[in-house]
Length: 254
Image (tube, rainbow, N blue to C red; front, side):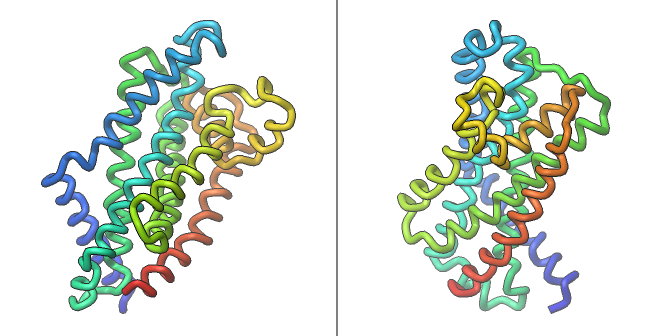
């Protein structure tokens, strides 16, 4: 099928994902409440210990919390995709004259809108608490674009998990095993130099650390070094590996 037509079909089905949110707003609980919980819990729990006061710690930790919130929100992608596959919704789509990949692409694009809302909640609530950017509009836009691009990449991992794991409990287990080492084994909450030496080796190559450093540096006007390049490289690599795998798993299901 023509790629332009296939893209149009995917966008139409992305609208379906957004309509589902409109009729079941409880689907946004993880996107709206979890980021606020993360900000309150980590800023006031670790702020005085790590930085001496929570105000300065907020400046350091908020870009990283945005990465963490996006990672946890991807669990919703796995579960909603799994539900559509197991309840036969995708079988109905298969009988329609649309691109075969359109339902999967529509899911991913629709959830990308949810991730935009997640970022809005994180930085909006952070601004209420006192978070301030110290860079011009272009670096801030670049930081947000990096975060969304990485969320898009993680979306394909979530889609693959939703396709291959047989039950919702298994999906949650796989998601936690994947997300926890990446988020808590990073420099989101504590600078790399303050971590034990054995842990620093992992933190330095962790894609979540690279993305957090890039977003933090761009928003606060700090040197970013190679963090932006590494974050882009990780994002492209994840998409290149997991998008074809997710499409393959989807075609096997349908």
